[in-house]
Amino acid sequence: MSGFFDALLHHSFLQNALFAGILASIVCGVMGTFVVIKRITFISGGIAHAVLGGVGIAYFLHIEPLIGAFTFAVMAAIIIGLVKLKAGQQEDTVISALWAIGMALGVIFMYLTPGYSVDLLSYLFGNILMVTKSDLLILVILNVTILSVVFVLYRQFISISFDEEYSRLRGLNVNVLYIFLLILIALTIVVLIQIVGLILVIALLTLPAAIAGLFTRTPASMMVVAVILGMLFTGGGMILSYEPNLPVGASIIILSGIVYLVALNLKKIISKK
Image (cartoon, rainbow, N blue to C red; front, side, top):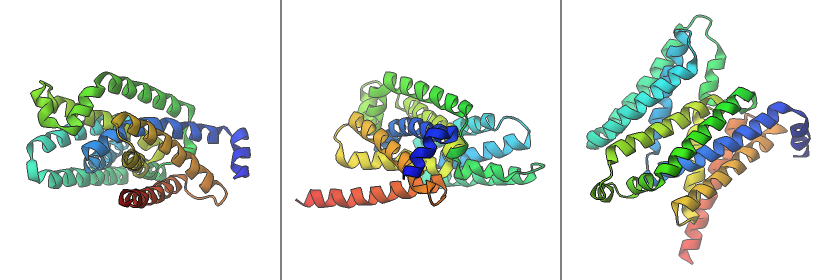
């Protein structure tokens, strides 16, 4: 462990990675709370996997991958949101289809891209140690934007997350707010995929918030605890992976999963007393 902290003082790439983990934890803790409360983890996963299609097409057309990812993310959020609102019992099947189509398109266009590079796999598995100053700037802008929107629309988002029918009676446009919430989640996913990978995005969106939900009573406190847990998981994963030279993303996911299982059993023990 001491070796990691010594390296942290001397290597800027580790400092960038730690800062990225902190920023990622903030936005994922906030948006993950809505994902868990609203129980839309599967929908978030569908959006995340569909993004890969936009990345593949962007590489094939030789344009900025971020443009393709943003485009597909927003499209997927809108389509999946409309499916959720209109399709009823068929929503899981439709979302699964969009999930698979997005992934398949990404794989096909990556294969067709001249000079295909294995670096494209970083969008799936991530490499937080490769975060640059420009990545950090994008992440700061993302955090400020999303936190600002959530601050303004906090009550409305909470209302539709807990009770859509009551929200309609209050005069809220539930459908528009719901799709807007999905778009915010999609934008979170897009930028974080570049930094921590698609798999880690889903873990950070759900596990810290799910653990926080076991021991908190309000959405606001749930967000705060989820952010803190996210920071502990990203920092702890980096520390655990440093000496044995393990993949950082995988280490963070394993640590998050173990803590979630422990917390779940701890909650059961406490509930029985």
